[in-house]
Length: 118
Image 1 (cartoon, helix red, strand yellow):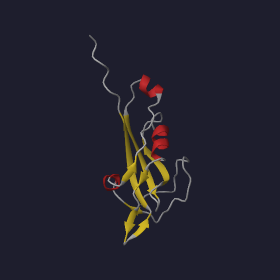
Image 2 (cartoon, rainbow, N blue to C red; image 1 turned 120 degrees about the vertical axis):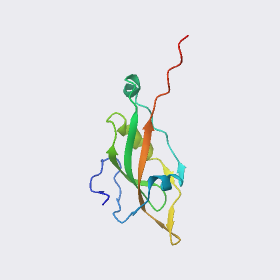
Image 3 (cartoon, helix red, strand yellow; image 1 turned 30 degrees about the horizontal axis):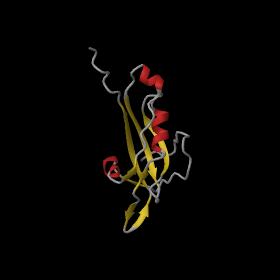
Image 4 (cartoon, rainbow, N blue to C red; image 1 turned 180 degrees about the vertical axis):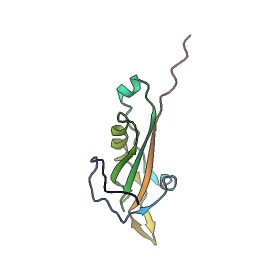
């Protein structure tokens, strides 16, 4: 049901169809290292904001094993993928043993309001 057959070609590793689905908000609680994406200059210039959604398989060691783009603007998706590849999670345990999990990641690109002109 997760449709792992389509990989974005960004991180190829052993995508595990046997990975256990875990809701993104639950997996977020086990995030140990989050790398913030670089805002693309051309996206910043046109004041483009938005959310990039990725499906991730997290390995037994907590490292991101594979990523699939679900949705997001073409200018924002590549830096989101590059950042998410570096994320590290606390390994998920099932009956005391580490397991691979599948989860969705959302990366929100927002621009700060410009300073008020005086």
